[in-house]
Amino acid sequence: MFVDTVKIKLEAGKGGDGAVSFRHEKYVDRGGPDGGDGGRGGDIILEASRNQNTLAAFRHKKLLKAQDGQTGSKVKRHGKSGQNLIVPVPIGTVAIDKTGKVLADLTNDNQQTVIANGGQGGFGNAHFVSSRRQAPRIAENGEKGDKLEVSLELKLIADVGIVGLPNAGKSTLLSVISHARPEIADYPFTTLAPNLGMVDIDKKTSLLFADIPGLIAGASHGKGLGDEFLRHVERTSVLVHLIDVYENVTRAYKIIQKELKDYKIDLSKRPQIIALTKTEGLNKKEISAVTRELKPFLPKKTPLLAISAQSHENLDKLLYKAKELVAKHKVAKPKQGKKKLPVLRLPRSLDSWKVVRRGDKYIISGRKIERFAERTDFDNPEAVARLRNIIKKMGIAHELIRQGIKSNETIVIGKSSLKW
Image 1 (cartoon, one colour):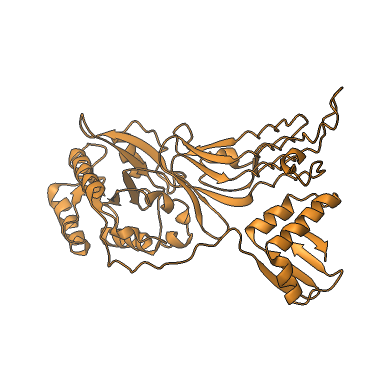
Image 2 (spheres, rainbow, N blue to C red):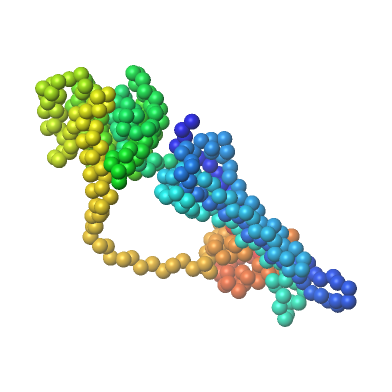
């Protein structure tokens, strides 16, 4: 089954907790702390693979979770880091978060992108030894890994996309010019999923053709098979627009052009070849009459051919014209607009923080302080005392006092809270 859109949840591995441990060896007096650090949580990595051609593997597997890091142990043993989870996806897969931001766009075989980072392991008590604190009983918790929900969309990467109304002859053409074997029948919407076929133009050039399921009026807004498959045209260099010669060719042409234009990306500006199909039953005079009827509606220099997949008439011309346009598209440089003046912004420091009062609670936000709070074991009085000391050293305590905090009022840092 061809699946080109799925929603999945990702959970990177949690970092391992640090260990509280002291040396207990014969003849070693006051051996000191030797608790090791926790291991790092595993990342989730998307990897483009040419061995994958659909997202069907994710239909019933909605949660992907990487391995957690292991807890540190005595004798300063570092916990084992969690194994990264490498997820193979088809070439052309795009990962998008809830806000619509593109997190990954995998267009090359073996290309990898870390999409969810594992949490850092917590420090063991051996890390906190100093001349003033020689027997610390503090160990940090490991950080949680990234948790997010993403949409995976597959956009086929083809050189040429074949579009047209249902039964225009798209699948038949692809089966003749390549070794692809799409389903072919005399009823609408025979093709329910895009088909790919590699076409050898000459000894040096091969192009990948994609047969896009038939479009109807309103397809760009979800009618018929809708815009589910128009996304597969986004990456193509050239479009071959097939029109059944026995249809009202002008009407058929306008319908497809409107749908291409109304799509979220204006695909009507993509280089096109217009091909009248099924011409084996017409003579040259009849074909010329249809050509003259359609030509006034085409943009200048748009190639217009009359072809027949059955008799192979003009298929060579079609393929060589496709080769020519693809080559031009690949060497064409995007137009550069006017250069905008650079906007200089101060980078946000990891040390920055903010205090907002809400009722009797004080919300402290800031990447660094939130990480410290996440790694703090609130069941350990020494660990909580350390967090309070960090709040003081970072100047947050001064701001809390300035805002009028009172004894026993609540401080909230991330998902943790403590009393003032």
